Image (cartoon, rainbow, N blue to C red; front, side, top):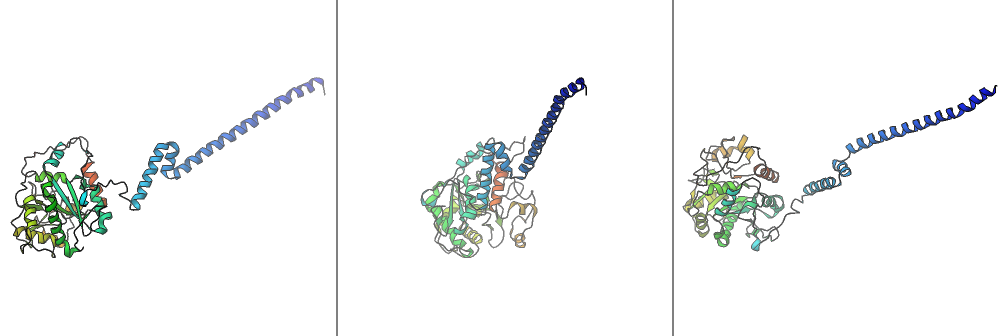
Length: 370
């Protein structure tokens, strides 16, 4: 082999080595990049399969922490710990005062004005076994808007709190419980309110509408209002579940009378109180609006909206058991058979939900009936 050829071969060796090195480096780089891409893809797919709060937590610690707290809150709800953060404002004799400080709408001056002008004491009939399943949700929703709220039960509970009437539980004793509660209120709180509403622990009351309706009524007149039933009592009587509200004079007459004019216990509570009111000269007032629509309702809003009434209701209801939106006043006051879920639904729909661009109507406080 010539010297020139040997030189060319020696010069080509570094070139071959360079190509090999470049090839290896390129191959290695490609493998690494491919592995990284596959790894990232795998991580992404895996993170999508994780609970949402974990993925959020990796990207944003603060948001992830908030979401975990929310999950924990839901877990507490499922375990029945719905009132763990409730601030119990306990007063003497097992009574409790509330004032809703949350301004939900742009202008609530009229409602706040009526809060001071038309004072309403709410009393709720409950039972020891219903405190944590029903009554607590009244406290946390509409009960906050009463000027004063008192829960009556067969047993005193200073923690919740409730006033014990020392009367046995059961439908056969609802009349005695109702009379006992009104007597207690008359003795201890007569001057602290203008009107006194009785309702059950599955009743929902829109206090602003109740004050609005009562703002044109005289509390010194012997009168009471509620969902009107036309049977049994000549002037009719008001459904106990829908709630009924007494004037000061009506409460005075009911509480001071212990004669045979009023049954002390037994019978159907609302009918017995209705008969008592009639015997005492207390008028069953008309609470319908100017279009003849009801304000107090002895069923939930869905039943009054679409129907499905029990057969007895067609005989009892003084307004003819109407249904649909034209049967319920725009200023409805009460609904009955409202479970806790529906109470919170009403809280949202009434006090939070609003259509953008539509202002609430400004009511005339000197109205007759709207």
